[in-house]
Image (cartoon, rainbow, N blue to C red; front, side, top):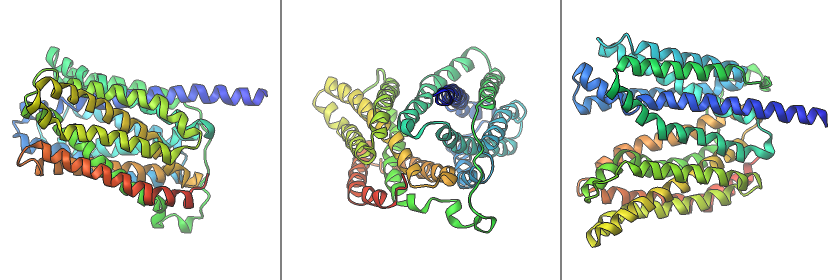
Length: 404
């Protein structure tokens, strides 16, 4: 009884430290998301299309490092990989203060920062699973994900406020201090070292970098990420196109509220064993939201007030639907992987999402020749296809290959 109480107290404190470390990491990241485009234009005089190319090198770096980060976190002590990645992530903010005169150095710094973020994000997602009792994994992942949503809600507006009132060096210093505080919390997390089970001869096989059993689920996750990427990149432009000009940015606030509410609820359903059912329900809710986006132009043509209501209802449904999906999908991947390959499972899970987000950014623009309604209609078709694919194939595949 005493040992059980001690373990529960250790889990609680370490889990809180992980949540704080994750929030501060995400907050420092989101400080720069809306501000770096302004920095590149003002400091280097770049055209908007070139700004996009420069910033995309960060995403490419994240994608490239994830499989290797998962491998390293599976064969080395995970906390050590986590803390080293966090330290590199934090130190990278110093570089922004010294690359203001050379765009090549800026690109190199962004690549290094992307490597650090990809490794940190992958390992952190795995480490928090290590410290949670399996009976509370879905609930814990849900709460852990809320820290990202809170950072997404407050980080961008804080970054914009700083550059309006101060300058970019203060912005970079603020991000550095926030990240270093997060590193402090990360360093005091208590977790057991998981000795790798595989022999050295098996370490370089393909399944050490990709969870092969998780590929069907990764395809479904990729399909769902495309309309989410479209929404993140083009919903504000689409709103302007259909005549919604007031409170456009509140879309993301309402979406964030949906994400947070759903994460507080869906994790408990996952812990009761309703993993595939929770995902299917989340996809249907998200589908309703994306259909609402596709019909936004028609609704505004009928009545402007109706269009505004649909705009925010769609935001909440998309947030609630995807917030339901995230912890359930994460648990699904983890339950198909041995304990020694949790990080590889997380890397596969996150890579499917990252690629889908990037594809959504590209497709959203390419399909908008006759207006963004067509882009979001395509997104709705993809979500429906993902639902059918998940129910008919992925859920059955999961039942055959689940380990717990």
